[in-house]
Amino acid sequence: MDPVVLRDDMVDSLEHESKGCVHSDSISVAMRDVPRHEFVADERSAYADRPFERFGTRVLAPSTAARLLEALDPQPDDSVLVVGAGVGYTAAVVAEIVGDRNVHAIDITRRVVYEARENLARAGYGGVLVDCRDGVDGLPEYAPYDRILLEAAAVSPPRALVDQLAEGGRLVMPLGTSEQTLVCVEDGEVVTRLGGVAFGPMLVEGEQADTPERNRTRREDREYERRDARRRRGWEQSWIDWDEAADAERSHED
Image (cartoon, rainbow, N blue to C red; front, side, top):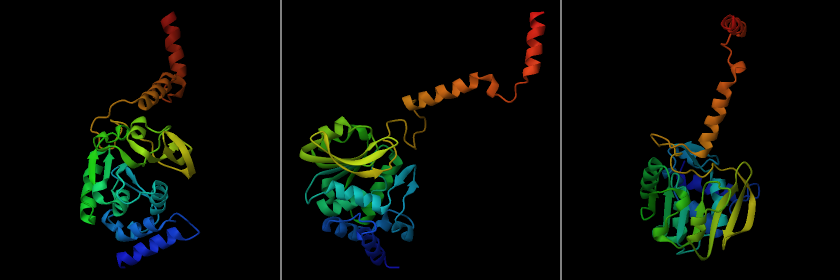
């Protein structure tokens, strides 16, 4: 089927009251114009409203991307930073509105960065700058930004990202851990809560999928401690013959 028809059907469904993800004309037009199939290998899957995994990163369902974009509300000529470039689709929709040279995207996974660059160039948004960075640090070289979109969950707005906002700028992000809420942050404060979401946690250096030798994080330290504690509990080891062990202990005492 013609990709243009598939895109129109996708956006029509997102505008329908049953989903109600797309409200603004700018987001509607941009999502109809961006060739999503250039970012997703299978053409039909590209326009299905479902997420999937790619190189250890989550590719957002169109409805989830639409919620983020509506909250972000980019305006023509805004300077925008996307933290968590993924396959590059979200950055492309933003670029359709603000201009590709006004969009910067970063991702902590180098392989994802390479793919995002290729996808954006193939789709006609080669002016978007995509760099391999730790998202918590943002991209200070090109700050300030009118809009920042964080596509990963954090327990609080990352200070560096808040600091890189222009006056009157907006940060959109999933806030929380097991229970997350999509929020808008302005002047360092949460000003709007837009309902529940489910995103992966913001990664730090050493946690990305393509790291050949992972650095130990506090989260990993806790897991290793739990494993060690379980190893020390002999009663959990099915291979121990407790009667034989007791006999050996008595023989040693004699």
